[in-house]
Image (cartoon, rainbow, N blue to C red; front, side, top):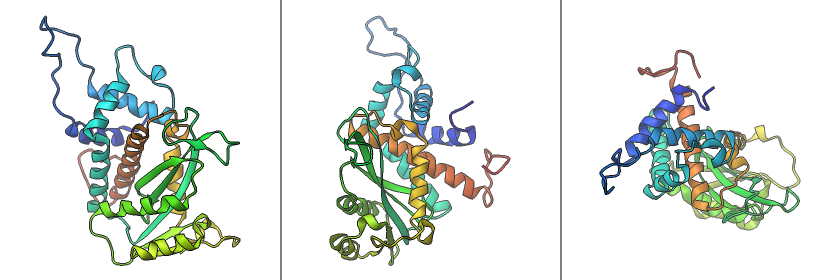
Length: 277
């Protein structure tokens, strides 16, 4: 069974391959004019998808001839993952439209048994190493970016860098409402959105209200979508740049999947699924 359906992996790979530089099949600098063939980028890309989805180790998913870490680091240096996420967001905004007048920010703590640059003592896991991501989504739940930190960091200090992610989204609506939970209920946090021309709608501490009563449930659903990729729900990556790149790829998958599902009823294309995804 494929890790992702073909109607999702094929457009992902086509755009990903367009961002890669051309490489010779054989190393031209080899003294004998021959060398073992370069592993196909498509093979490594498929291995990365399996790694993210199943959460297994590199050794368990790799064939003896594949070099996943080397190719992964090469693509990170080229900025391929970040560029892919940006193109997916632009395509979604052009075809469906991002709901930027209603955004939500919230933190999510996951396990990080290997520690690393963005790991810290988790307050919800008996002090074990954990990773916190402060994610921002639009009014439908499309991920707009995230800030990674140790699990021991409070949500409030991560709000400012999370809101800074709006600056890279192009023209913004005049009125933007930022939905936050009670963890952001403090004097400093309440003045922060207003200082940026935003309207903060923050839940009050001690007042119980279902998450469905506000627009915050979109970010909770997006966290659940991201946690379905077990490699980062239980993160063993020690370098922040690798974790960020993997989150860029996960956010791209979520964005393209939502784009295909929502465009299925309004658009037609030659690889359109026969049934609504």
